[in-house]
Image (tube, rainbow over all chains, first blue to last red; front, side):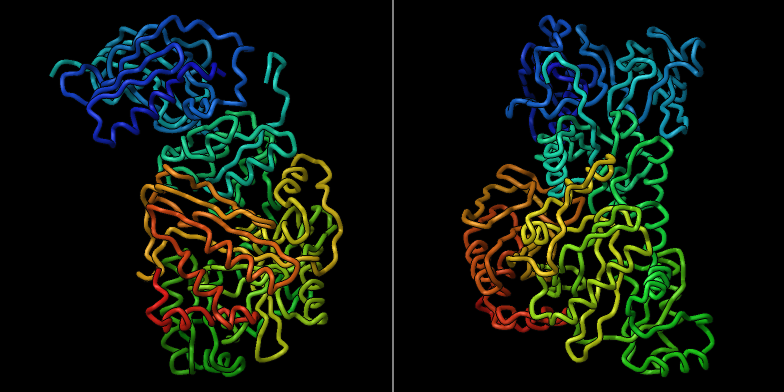
Length: 171
Length: 462
């Protein structure tokens, strides 16, 4: 589990979801070492999430008593979240459409469906989510270049968790 | 948690609202780690903040999250849960979730799947009850809905008025009142078509109608091997459209003989089922005759469980969790009648002056009463946005006192000192009922509330 002072991608997603339905033009939130700016304003690039992270070192496990989240902190840390990324992701997010286990390859040892830098079509499979032994292909949803994977191979993922980022083709 | 690894067993809570808060508290009480399975909109709810972790299982509508057994089971796997508590409603009585969890070696906090099936439809529940010598209403299954001759014979055998019930119905749905044989011939085919549409099965039965009966239920706790403990009874007769509004423990004015019939019948049923965990056996207690008839088994913890907990000084939810973890539930054997009277009000986000229309929105201020014997089970707080997707229950106000008169006075005072701003609630309805001479006297029937509320003077609004 990540330290309570470090936002998970789920935390950020929650924030975006909340702000998306509101009238905010922009918002700035400080989570410990990480500041997050969100904007609804047109022209703010690439999905509207920017993360500027001060060095988010792997927090020592002993540092944060996870069971006692400070009242003012973000919602309880989510499970098996992507590790906090130091570099800001480039592009739109591709979110998990369901809870499950995310696989980047069709079988253990096989090459990944997609590597960062690959170009994909909207219906290209970028991974699989297994839910109770049912395998669900996950497609890119739009044509473009996959810039990063935010969920590891074989990671438990939640509904709405960011799996990857994509820079859509210019249309 | 410090640097030492967390060895506490993880309990996944597959529910929301006040019962999620309640189960989190019970998990902490037994030294487990509560993890909440939440929909998107509930991911930062007050219950979510109380849990050790939250896992988002699906989108906000219940049909995309709380009602999906495979999503809940996957969440349990992902978080390493040893047990899943389903609360009430949602998946709490779905054998499918229990089976999915069993395949993964995860405990379902509730009865076995076969028990859920046996009591899950009215037809088989009735058969189980009859086999255990539990009194049931005179009734009969309908073989052919178009055989008018036979219908008339069946109807006359029971007598009028009678009820047509959908075998697979529940929660008050799929029930029709019939006054005579002409109506019966017309309504049976209609009811069969409706039941087929609503429940996927058109099977019906006819049952004697009790027009002035009380709803009395018995709290049971089975060890899963035929052992059973009885924790008194509750009266839940203040109802509107089969939805309970006020509950109390013990049921007032029951003779010793009648109480014994209810408790003995419940015990027999639990033993016959080898029932595991907390459950409720519901009965109608007729006010015009000595009849007591079985209604159904609720194979879950119920909304109104706190009145029993407070009356007997027990923690039923912690006992459920302990049993699921293979531990002694640590429940005492108690007398049939508790040493106190407890009354609970369900405070809903509904406008009682607008036909109980549900509403949602921002709760701006909340004040709960203080004083001896007061308990509030809730998840609402100032600043909470009450969502439109789910049940309208906001809070349960529970008060314990040494006898019923004192409990009625105490809960009326507690209700008068409760303030919820920003959302219209059912509190004005409670003020009305708690001041009504019929309720103060006790032993009202389930048919009492609707006409009394309908005909109230205009002065009581708000």
